[in-house]
Image (cartoon, rainbow, N blue to C red; front, side):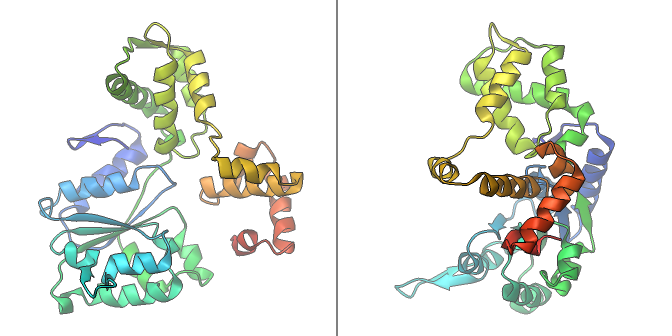
Length: 312
């Protein structure tokens, strides 16, 4: 999703439906849950909702619930430092505005209950906040498996928006590519005069597991590699190659010490995380059959690997 001065870029029906619904609920105060894979523009949509609401001049604060549990709790509720000074949490700092609880599925289980109680009683604290949660997970399954507090899920899920993955928006890829090409050519001082049809076909064939996060990096590297101002298939391939598998030094060292079986397990885990645990999509990324993937998951689960044991 791209929003610039409240301009929406895209004509995909599912995308437009999500945006239209967001515009309609922007005028309300009801809690909201936004669901979608990593990088599909959930936080950007939250900002769009804020900008189209009566609260747009008020604070807009985001809490990443995937941080360490104590850090998240302090950020939400406030904390007292070593010198005894109290630092207000986002619930107080965003009064009259909006708070986004990003990656809400990562909240520590006991704090989920505490947060629900507080959000349900905000008026008792003289706080007026529009609360929005975002997640890459199927929270109803988390509730069913006891990994997420049912009441907190119900609090947010009464109104829900689902963001489509970038790979499912084929009709929008040309416009989005042109947008990013313009943006990075201006940022980098590189002239881009055209994008070939072969390049656009190549872009359409990429899976885009991380959606906009991955897309923007690939196009930035593509602009750096284009020749004579033309983005062709080779430039896209070079941009993809430079963007793909950019492991940190620590990750490289870890991989060097891994057995083939351990590396296989890590790749499968990463594919599942990238696809929000969608096994069909993960199998496609890995180039294996869904049956092979299912057998591997069962193998790792039987071995007691924590991620796979908890996988639903």
